[in-house]
Image 1: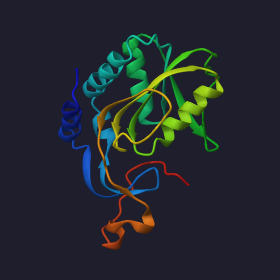
Image 2 (image 1 turned 120 degrees about the vertical axis):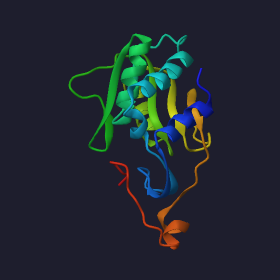
Image 3 (image 1 turned 60 degrees about the vertical axis):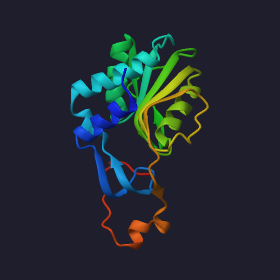
Length: 192
């Protein structure tokens, strides 16, 4: 069993917890950034983290693990492998998450949604909408890090391996911007 401190240590050991002034994919600014790809580059860490997720949902009779692009793909694959089920990937197209390449989710499928770092829950909520459109039964959501301090309500069971209360700011009221601290944009996709 992984503790929250174990998860934090993985991020620290891999230099994945960054300090500075960052533009998050939500469009908000923050003084810290949890760079999941610095963790996800190590298969042994991915295996260990996903083992914890799989153990928390082992009794839920999961049929499919669904993850949003991009980091969620790696986590969905490894969690599904450990549970012995399929993995599907919610890709963004036209501002909406969907299944591509003819992949399907049948009504009544028991779905576990996994993602990497949750700040506002945007990608996770989009996966929940996708699952609802396919009339599936969502058994829960698992994330590596919940940056909201546990404040996001998803309407389903949420298992965060680590919960932190990371401050984030609207750009117009960001104290780091006011102090002219250089802004870094480490993510690949941002809310428009």
